[in-house]
Image (cartoon, rainbow, N blue to C red; front, side, top):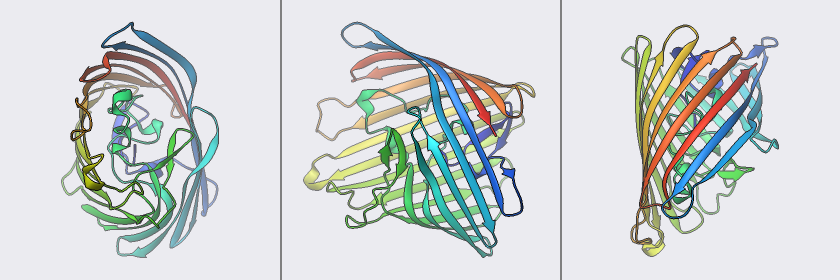
Length: 343
């Protein structure tokens, strides 16, 4: 969900993007800038269950629409964004202000995106169409393995070699509105959530990230914690990346205990100034700690070529194959073509 992702500058030329704020804004004056994107796709999915007949779905629709405004009155900056998913219903996503203390330290308060996760929240920053953990109904608790939006206060400090951050939040896990992980629970009576991160860039072309979250009481007598680590290395026209995250639910008196693991390994290859391709292998597994007789797992293989048509318009295709164990499904296939327009 990003956070930060390797962003193909035009899909083809691979370069490092720092965060969602790295979008190329349209500068209105010294204090205001705006930007946005429109993304739509055609998708086909075939699912083969363990028992029974195979089924398929196909769609042709808009995936996401986003518009944001950045305001700068040094040392304070602010960001407000409006987002609509496939339903087309708009909602506020980013709504925060940042105070630059100086010396590399910044304080942010409001509603913002989690630091955790290698794959991007915004589809225009993705090098594939689908996420590595898309794994079917048997993994309903796996998608939030990487948090989304939440509200609170965060402090970041660092230099060109490293960044350290700590956040106090209304909740770690997001509340899904209209299918989007777009806010926290807005309630501190059940206790706050905490998030920390460390990013290292002291070696040329290498980025290392470690992040964690902890929420002692999620409101359902469950303590939730997550650790996420990833690394990326750029070698010429190739970018190599790997990620591992582990999420743990500790239920009251052992009820609902669960462990969720997710990993990915991928290579992004620029072919020329317009074309690039990404290959990814990813997996997810659940350990339900005795609440179920079987613990499902899945592995996913993805190939995603992309082409830049103009600086504002690109196309991305994807073919993915997933294989399941101890799950309702036996295997599934996904084929998609996505158009991305940025302004």
